[in-house]
Length: 114
Image (cartoon, rainbow, N blue to C red; front, side):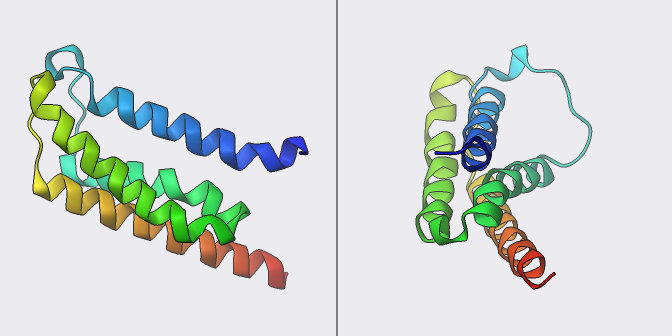
């Protein structure tokens, strides 16, 4: 497998790891970040699905449900580490994953036409 083929996988795994660290670290250990919590979730999950949906669009059929499931599992784990799981966060995660997937698919289509 060529290095360029590994790039979207590496980005996706790195972003998934960063999301896990940010959302599964006790809240007292995390710095306060300005802005809406839901917007942070939306952006993070859009970033999660974007690389693979752009470079490997055929993976979108499993990537999107996997990202939504990952966001749901995070929210289920959070109450066990001193944080609060919220349905609103699950919804923001799912919307972000869908947005990232759509942007990636659109970018792929546009770059194929150029």
